[in-house]
Length: 224
Image (cartoon, rainbow, N blue to C red; front, side, top):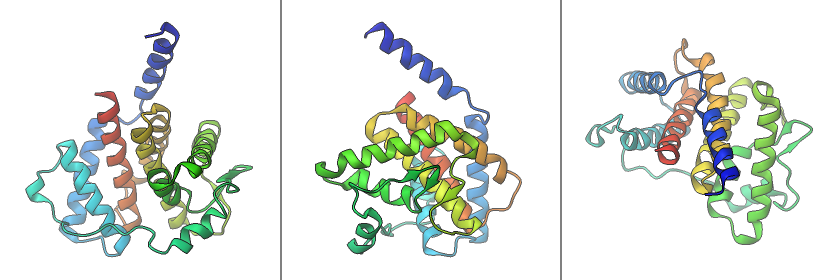
């Protein structure tokens, strides 16, 4: 391997592992909060039910849950069914800019995840450019990123937008084998962890548990 490439990779790895919340703390937090939700059935809406399904799926892969003990099984995760919805968001994708003057387009995490997974080659470059714009925004603004959005949304929705972007970054890191996206997700989730560790979980917080599971699964896949 080229020496400069190896040095760059090691530097990224060191920065990646410089976490304020260690993996064991996250594991304990996720297992405990998951247990609370299952015992009290505090996942009432469709979005939270979908999140729990994916959380269980990832917990099994991480070795945090026995497959036979999964509670939510046999459901189909809902995605964007109406093609007009995603087309309206695209506007079209060649002209869509997800971050402009530090204002983030609502739905960026949700729709870029779908597009990055499914879009054709013609749109790939536009999706890639927007992923890079989001990444740059977070690298520059750090804890002040993902604060302003292009639509008026309430506090709960702001947190859902943040978590969906962390989830997007973890999945993009796996798809493209790119540690930069995982690093960004780690930094954001470390910061957000302070918001949640002493609070009871509401429905929107299932998205945070999913973001943590995606993060730990991605770290296992890319760093093992």
